[in-house]
Each structure stands twice: as C-alpha cells, then as structure tokens.
Amino acid sequence: MSDATTPVPPAAGAACALPAPPAAPAHAERTWQGPTAAARLGILSRAKSIAIVGASSNPARASYFVATYLLSSSPYEVYFVNPRADEILGHKAYASLADLPVVPDIVDVFRKDEDLPGVAREAVEVGAKALWLQLGSWNEEAAAIAEEAGLDVVMDRCVKIEHARFHGGLHLAGFDTGVISSKRQVVAR
Image 1 (cartoon, rainbow, N blue to C red):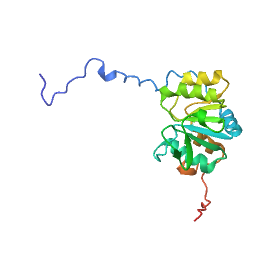
Image 2: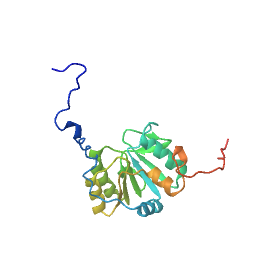
Image 3: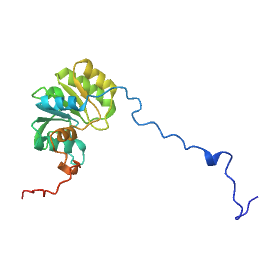
Image 4: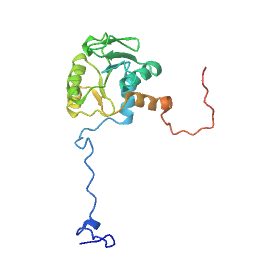
C-alpha cells in the first residue's frame, strides 16, 4: 500500500510507450489524381458559364458566398440549381441542370456526398464540360462517371478561391495573398 509521499511506479513499459498513431485522414482511400494548377486554369479560362448545384439563398452557406463572388468578380454567366428556390441573389433558380436555358461549361456542386454520383450523371446528360466538387467534396465514383463521359473533373477545390488565385483576387474577403506592400489601399466611397 502506498502513502502520499511514496511515488507509484508506472506500469511496466508505460513510461516508454509510443503514443497511439493518429487516426487515418478522412480521405485516406483517395486514388484519383486531380488536374494540375495549369489544367484548372485552363478549365476556368475556357468556361463561359457555371451552374451552381445546391445553390442557397442563405448568406451563411458557402454556395451563397461563391455565387456572390462569381456574380461580382468573374466573367461567367452564373446559373443556380435548387429545386426548393425560385430565386437566388436576384436570379432565377432552376430545379435541375436539364431545366437551364444553356448547357453549363462547369457544374459546381454543393451537395452531400451520396448525391454526387447522381449530379455527375446529370452533368453528363446535359453535356457539361466539367464537374467541379467544392472544398471537402471527394467522390471517386462521381469522378469516374464524369471522366468516362469526357468531362474534366476537379474535386475538393473551391471555384472562387481558384478563380481569385489565378486572377489576382485572393485579397477579396480577407484571403492572404502573401504580398507585403506599403501602398495604401484605395477604398471607393
């Protein structure tokens, strides 16, 4: 029996035991290789229109933020796909990709993982040129469906961030561009 002044020895080997290995990353099963930065720039440069599937009129949603950026800071025609909305940011919302008045060049997807293969099939059916899955979205089945039909595929990347990165706009909304300058920002009033 031990009293308060007698140290209790650690269990045999406990003092030298290595910590348990960290849990596997969320996407440890990733085998698909995404396009290079130059290829992503090419996809964005060739595009004239972007359909945002899963667009939301809720300003707290990432799709709303991306849509706001694309409408204000990009040359693209932007279309919204959400069967539960009539209008988003003053633009008509469509129930599906098939309902759009144009074939979108890029289908930018903000949907849950299990919906992604279906969205990929719909993008193929309407003749889109690229399937773009937003940050945090990774679905190799959806990628395979799109690539087998000849679509370019980008996963786990944000259209807004990539466009801004390639066009010098990462300073918008507080993104750090890594540029240190003594030039004063001009703010229009």
